Amino acid sequence: MGVHAAADTEYDWEFYGGLVGAYFTSHPQIQPATVRVENHDHPATAHLDETWDRTDEWYNYRTNPRDKAQVLATLDESSYTGGTMKGDHPISWCQTYQGGRSFYTGLGHTKESYAEPDFRKHLLGAMRYTTGQATADCKPDTGYRTIFNGKTLDGWKQAGPGTFDVVDGELRTEGGMGMLWYQAEELESYSLKLDWKMAGDDNSGIFVGFPASDDPWSAVNNGYEIQIDATDAADRTTGAVYGFTSADLAARDRVLKAPGEWNSYEIRVQGERLRVFLNGVKINDFTNTDPVRSLRNGHIGLQNHGAQDQVSFRDIKLKQLPST
Image 1 (cartoon, rainbow, N blue to C red):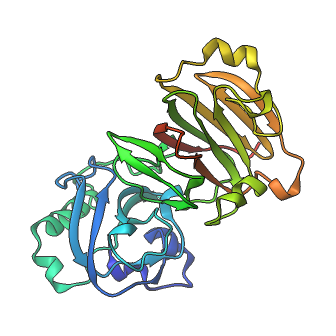
Image 2: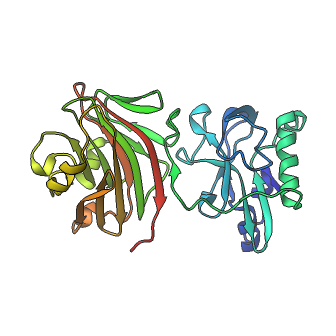
């Protein structure tokens, strides 16, 4: 059971690094911040609400432990200054490690922490788990994980003009031309699932495979856009890889729902292969051959095309896939 500075030691001991899950790298000054609870099934977090506002010294870590541990709570980096983990900032996690149980929390620098009833329950639940008095599923989440929770834009960043409003659990485009991109993670092989809805004859799209940048045109020039537009040319309408290849229009039209109704995309990237599924039906299968636009490492983003375009998004999820 590791608390706070347990991550700030034994940097040359590989076993210990694996046991704690991630090493400390830096921290800003002590200040208030919001902790977001991802898992309420663990005894260390079962008593907490969805958000937990408190003051502490907030650690940044050299790596993200999400691929090997069950993340129990994260930091909302927009709620304080000095976070460096691009919006996906685990702060408490657990794992099964070499046959034993491991728990770590980055909370607990200040002496005042140990008088907080919720923090004391947090530690007690961790003790009960690590000593075997309570059970919990601490396997890493290898299925789909939500990257837009319907409430906040943790991990997302606006590039260019316009914005996205969070309304009734949805993201709604406002103005443009800009892009909301998921800066928290550079992706290699993955499945992206989301729902989208047009108000009428509107324009938007999902960008994939572009480098980190606050310039939306970087995504246009270095990545690919999966188009959302009811009435444009074949290589620029819904399901197309914009400007490169049309969707299978017959297959698309069989399942495409009308403006005002929700449609679902699955965008599957493996190596340089890009596949698009609309409402469960494959409508595009494209392979990149341009090294400038390589799909092997890049970010994803949502376009806000312009003031006249009204497109909504919801239920945005990611799942890591094998590279082939």
